[in-house]
Image (cartoon, rainbow, N blue to C red; front, side, top):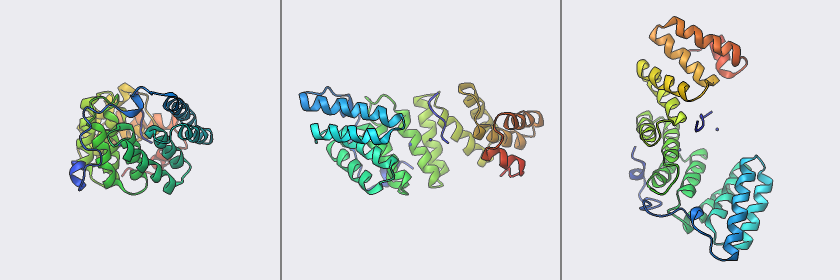
Length: 259
């Protein structure tokens, strides 16, 4: 299972310039072989810093990023790591400077485009972020092409562009039918658009991929309520009571806030 958000409009046309250009055959910098002692040290400390960041230790990741840049100040993934750490630490100005520097050095790197795009989306610049996700999705050498499309969909929802978001999520599913995020958001969009049968299909597929969460159980309850299947609605209600009591979705259920 990829992840379930609760934790990426033909957007390129929405900007005057494509920020990354044609990235279809450009190998990500982080995947390139490190040549020379300085670059090897920078790569090793950057990868170590990423592990610390994923482990919830941004302070240690920050030290690793600094060591990497002391070894090789021209290594784009190290600037990308520094941007991610600053983002986690809520140091937005410093984070943006690091992402911009990384992007200038490696405009075709999909990971840098994704991370910079997500930063922009998280800081209220959703429209601008979309072009970076689209650029990342064009790289045929990127290991996770579905990720930037999913992020583009999430940021489109934040702009209240459900039509654009739906297009991105459908493209994400074509790249990876097991994309749990895309399934959840397509079910949510379908429900809000009154296409409840379609929403049910997406949610059923989501629950084939993963155990229900509080959010997905609450969505399922509301879909079944609209479809008039009281038995299925009751099953989701029971699930909320048994496994997710105290969560915001359960509180909404108890208060009858179905819309």
